[in-house]
View (tube, rainbow, N blue to C red):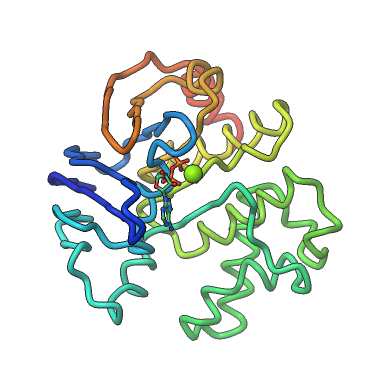
Length: 237
Ligand SMILES: Nc1ncnc2c1ncn2[C@@H]1O[C@H](COP(=O)(O)OP(=O)(O)O)[C@@H](O)[C@H]1O
Ligand SMILES: [Mg+2]
């Protein structure tokens, strides 16, 4: 569960990132975060994974107050949260396998365990056959799949996606959207920031709208794409 209590983020230059936001996201929910550029979407996500700290207010992630988390505890929090970015952020000189193994290696898993986890996770995103490729040998959609695998390898309870389809063609966007929905349907809480209103309409579910740092709308859309995926889910596995 993620809870915001009157959360405000004011950057050093005085810019307002987030302005008095109150909300609750239940475990396993799928939520879209929308609003124009500069509305505060990225700030909202950064506050959850402690890339930024709020200027006032409190944020609880699974009951733990992350707004006062000492720096040394941040890596523990990050083990339960996966993050995906618009620009993929893969390491170009490392293979797909090495990019995905970054976290297990840091956590000190044996190379055999790393391999097993990486293989399973790459299979989940449909890229087990590209283990030894380098990021630039892959299409944009495939690179984003690798980035998703990297975010998932730790089996996080929460997946934060910051405009993950922003650099992709509509067809590839849908592919990535389906993959992220599949992850949600397996029980992960997903917060998906996008300003693509069409995408949100197609998928449905809860929609939070930010404007100039304020939460100006919070409503539920009927499930679209999600329902389709649910219906075929059993056949795929
Ligand atoms: N590191 C930063 N330093 C100063 N201002 C920032 C910083 N990051 C974001 N902002 C400002 O905070 C506001 C919200 O930005 P952001 O969260 O990136 O919005 P969005 O992701 O919706 O485009 C904007 O006015 C932006 O200029
Ligand atoms: Mg942003």
